Image (cartoon, rainbow, N blue to C red):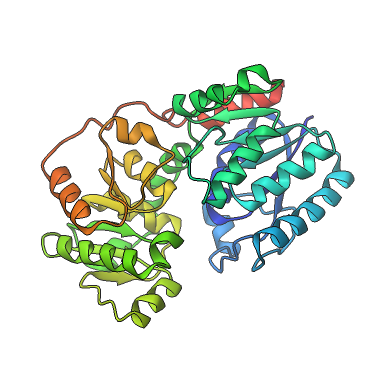
Amino acid sequence: MKKIITVVGARPQFIKAATLSRQFKLIGIDEKIIHTGQHFDANMSEVFFEEMEIPKPTFQLDINGLTHGAMTGRMLEGIEAILLQEKPDGLLVYGDTNSTLAGALAASKLHIPVIHVEAGLRSFNMDMPEEINRILTDRISTVLFCPTDTAINNLKREGYDNMPIKIIKNGDVMQDAAMYYAAKAEQKSDIIKKIGLQNFVLATIHRQENTDYPKNLKAIITGLNEINRQTPVVVPIHPRTRNILAQLNILPEFKLIDPVGYFDMIMLLKSCEMVITDSGGVQKEAFFFGKHCITLREQTEWVELIDNGFNLLVGSDASKLRDAFGYFKNIKSDFSLDLYGKGKAAFFAAEEIATY
């Protein structure tokens, strides 16, 4: 039986990892999970793992609240010790966090094959720590599972065809998760009843380039206020961002709610008219649930959403945000297009890992 060590560091990575964990169990791969603790999340209680049917971590490193360098260094040290003890056949990482890079570095230095799920993504913005993490992780990986043709083409442009690395397009495990949990969310969530709205726009704001720069934040809130006068806007907001709004005396006219769990987020996505976000994952989830998305960034890793007319980039420009909202209010799109594997990404990846 093959033994795989999976490294995760944040709640979204657990949700992604659950898709492959289910497949590993079905085909007999022994998986052990390391949780680095990168993002402390009070919602990750016993109930979280039970409701989401996610295997609990075998190892907990509890590393968080440090600078990028200190955090990555301590993770590298902790993961290396576990790998020396466990001697796995491979190490699996997801996405682009510091946990992703630390896991890949630890394994590659011990000559343990590195499997990178969500490989090949590029924003072409080296100011983002995530961009550095994903580029470096791709380069030291053994197997790269790419969600889209765009990701494959990014790797080809960077010369990966000439490297001893296996590149596979398997689809996006986030679509697997969204499809799997959608029915459960109907039973578990009462968020729509709580907010008391049937027709609304869902918005999320969390990136530092938007929350930590007053000019950008004020422009986004101005744009959302204008949209709210036409259609109610609902924003799950982190306490830190709520405090920044209060300090800057920025007054949202729309509905602010506390951060929500995954089931609640699914129901908000299923029920809303449109999505406005600066999150990478939420852009895709909007598509999974058949909603147009306006992205509060200057670039996105998910360019196929732009190319196919499901997403518009507006940065932090209030007038562009308002115009994009007006545009999407008046068009219909075919969301049946297969961009991300139709929920089979984890199956294809697990089958490949089993035979590698």
